[in-house]
Length: 263
Image (tube, rainbow, N blue to C red):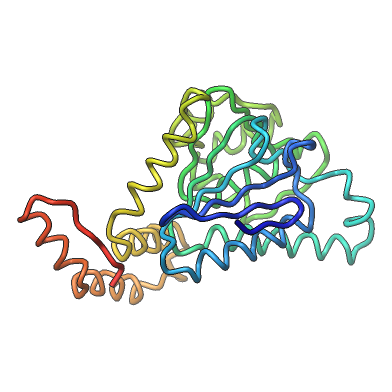
């Protein structure tokens, strides 16, 4: 297990786990935590054995409750501090959003502000029935930049995105699922086992196929002028040229589970 004071990272088979570990403040995130998160993701990215990453919060009461306001005087009281903080947040969110392997946000409890922003950067969001979601920017006078809003609009559509921001209220897990903000809502006692099984199911599939679909879906929601269709085609061709494609066909004919290597 790797860790900093407020971040934890460990690996179980082909699944990497990243935990925001500030439970006394409902996993409010400081500058140090954002910077550490980017480093742990880089480790998962470079580890060829890791095929899926699960992101969660410690303590059982929150995924992430937003920024750690107690750190603002130290970290965001000057323009230089604000700029450094914003760079760290952007770098971490970009690292999650552009991560080449599947990511799952495992959410229990409060998912507020920057927690919603980070969850939007993951491929899937699975939460408990008691989870709460909200972006209180309009109660604090904060501005939200285009990239963050676009991710929300791409997921839930413009009307629900406006409702989330205009009201600045907290939404239930059922409401979040109805809007398309989360993929699955589970009883509290089932969350870890369900996500573990889901992650391992994905990790057992052909990584070249899974990772290519992640990239191509990302291109589908990118401005048409910026799409890299050549890379999309190259990734598809690589699947058909792979040993895993041969293994998949062979395993199907032999009525057994395939053993994919990512090559």
